Structure formats: C-alpha cells, structure tokens
Image 1 (tube, helix red, strand yellow):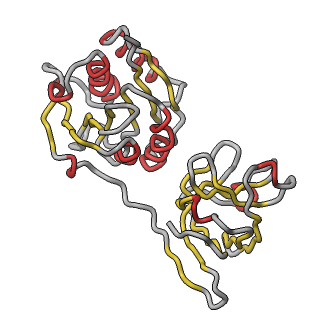
Image 2: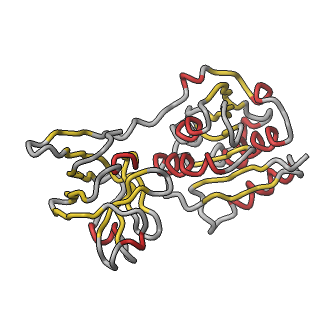
Image 3: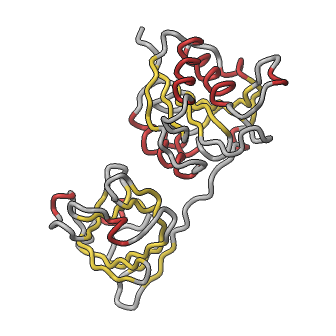
Length: 275
C-alpha cells in the first residue's frame, strides 16, 4: 500500500517556522504520510487567491488529503472544517470555513460530508492564533492514517459551508454583431500572464479581440501558444487551466497593461461560446 500524501498550501511564507511546524506535526501524528508543498506564497489574507490556487491544483494531485490555510479569521467564531469530496483526487480537504476550500471541492466532484473540527481537550488555555498547528495539521494527519472523518468533529450540512461569491461576468451585444464581455482579473502568475474569470471556450472561433483596460484599447490576436506571439505583442490564449489569459510575447502582460487582480477588463470580438 502506497503512503498517503498530504498536500499543503498556505499564506505562511517560508521566513518563519510555520510551514516546518506543519510538517513536524504531520510527521509526528502520521509518520508514514508523505507531505507535498504546493505553495506557501499565497498573498497574506487573500482567501480568494488561495481558493483559485487550490482549484487550479486540485484536479492534478491524485489521492490524499489537501490541507490549506489562509485564515484571517483565526481565533474568531469562523468554523474549522474537514470536507469529504465525491470524485477523483484528494478525498479530504481541511482548513478554515471561509470560502477557501469550496472551489477545490467542486473541482473534485463536490462536497458530500463535512465536519466542524473538535478542539483537543485542554485547549482552553491555549492561544488560538495558530490553528494550522493546533487543529488543521492534526486533523489532516488523522485522515491520512485512516481515521474516519466523523471521528474528527460534528457533522454539518455541506450546504452550510461558506462559498465565495462567483466572479461577475457581463455581456452585451454590439450593433456590428460582436459581443463585449466584461470580466475580472482572477490571477497573475510570476511571468505576468493575466488570467481572466472567463472560460477558455470563449475564444473558440475567434482570431482577434479588442481589449479595453484602464481606458486603453488593444487589438490582441488569439493564439495557441506563447511562442506564436512576437516579442512584446499582446495576445489572448486558452491557458493550462482552461481560462482566457492575456499574455505578452516574452514579457509581462500585467506590467504592459498595468493591471492587478480584481481589475475589470472588457473583451470585444466575435466569440464562439459564451460561458
């Protein structure tokens, strides 16, 4: 039987001992588990950014337990949860019930069971500022060693789990037959590629599209690969996560267009499918 993997993602960074302590707790409580670090550079307190990262990664992880911590509400009445999902990939997700986990759960077939984690006895005098160490990592370790999710706490209705609001996407028909789609920047990777909250299927059949960003109009070719663009040229493509991305040949689209996560972008073109 292969070792169970525990996948970690957080906004803890690597400057302090936080991530190392998570590893140590899991090794202590589930010594046969294999820990895989997904990312610990999620922007501090950025629950939406963390949720998007988990949704991008979750379908590619395989079996195991996904432990995620982006938790500005630590120590407050926000719930700490473990979620069981229905599909392929990690069977369990552990973390704060603040919207961080549900997009990943949806990518994995949807939540079928959830429990609010019980705090260890004698925890009443302990400062509640490090639930990653005191609550989430022990729970993930127990799941990794085969404990039933019901043994971790009190079952709750999966419909009560906190979900983040869906990105707002609007469309309007133009007199010339084209369509204008307004959406938001969902993610900017380290190369400066700008992922939009828009399915890549929108680009089917399109050859070019107009971009309106910060009142600047850019005509962007639709390409299949980064290398199809001349250096410095702005383009659109369907990225590895099946989303529309604004890219620049050997450059940063974020820097070129001066955009940040959450900014609004308008695309104008003859699009094949609106999702």
